[in-house]
Amino acid sequence: AQKVTQAQTEISVVEKEDVTLDCVYETRDTTYYLFWYKQPPSGELVFLIRRNSFDEQNEISGRYSWNFQKSTSSFNFTITASQVVDSAVYFCALSEVNAGGTSYGKLTFGQGTILTVHP
Amino acid sequence: ETGVTQTPRHLVMGMTNKKSLKCEQHLGHNAMYWYKQSAKKPLELMFVYNFKEQTENNSVPSRFSPECPNSSHLFLHLHTLQPEDSALYLCASSQRLAGLQETQYFGPGTRLLVL
Image (cartoon, rainbow over all chains, first blue to last red):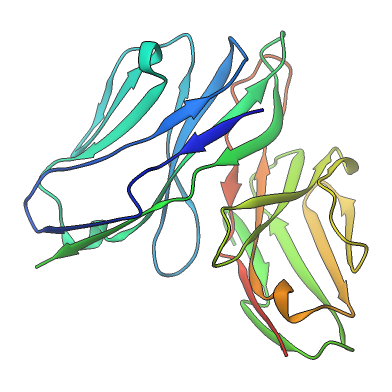
């Protein structure tokens, strides 16, 4: 069975600090997708990134960066120079994929990390 | 309208009421999903529809009845709910094609309170 663990329930930082959100996953599949979503107070889950299990390159998008380490089954998310608008709940998720590379559509979510950025 | 929309955004209902949640996606996707997010549990997948056909029912009680008349619309019919069904109900959609890397896009959710 698949499992996603976000050990940090809540993180509180002051604006401009860097913050890393941890995500550890378990799966028996050799092919899978990993995702990060942001959920602001409005409730909508906003897609941030998708990573294929074959692609271990780290990615940077503005102040956001992701570190995928297949050897440790981790997919951590770092926000550099955090801002108040980054305050939200962040979810890491895992998706099964069949041998043909097609997703089954089942996302397994972690518990989420509540990030609060203080001015 | 763009993206995935859900109505109503908030709903209060009694245990004997019947109500429906509506989801509409404007992304041209062929798969739609219902998720439940309650305070004490992680996001739970409820139903999956692929090309209007239900492909997943994650052991959801029969008091929740989904309907997908076409690839753009998804409903969740509610009847005789329990207070523990109070939660945020999220709809999502994606484009599912063989070999295509797929991403689910979510609506803003309906916050349901059952009294």
